[in-house]
Length: 204
Image 1 (cartoon, rainbow, N blue to C red):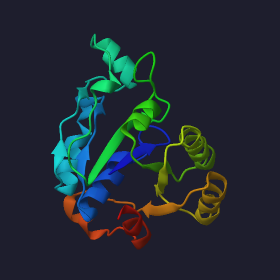
Image 2 (image 1 turned 180 degrees about the horizontal axis):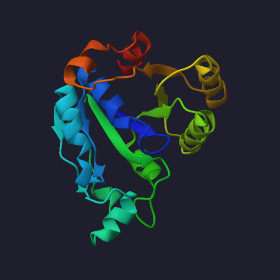
Image 3 (image 1 turned 90 degrees about the vertical axis):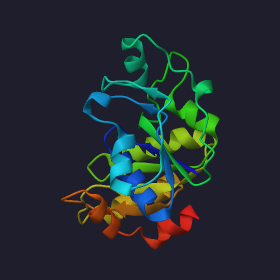
């Protein structure tokens, strides 16, 4: 059971979640979803990975931070109301980054701490990712939240090895995989891209 968090929004958390579910036999759960007017990540994972999924606890149409989406719809997110499904092999995906607000008292990192499961951080490969990734790792480490490692998502270049080394050294972690680039993203194309052995071993 692992929590997939990102260094920011739209870094590829859902793609990585689907990739893992497709190849490692995990179910999928996203407790808080915003932006359903553009589609839901649960539906994307179901279609891409053909994996079992669980319904969201909080689901909002506006594509903004969870606390704002809840306010717009006249509700408030209560993290005590969020309980994990009974599945032992479960991928839990967050919304936005670890410090995104959920309500006036709690951030996403508070929910991660409450759920008490190890975290996989998804990071971009673009310029600035070292800083964003190390800030995310520092926030998790400061709360004594166990980090399984980092998965890089995006096009790589000849600087990628130096970026990975910096994240591993300064973040006291391991980069478990570089998610492949998909020109066409379907179940068939996702199924063809096996998880690297380093990531598979970490997930056991």
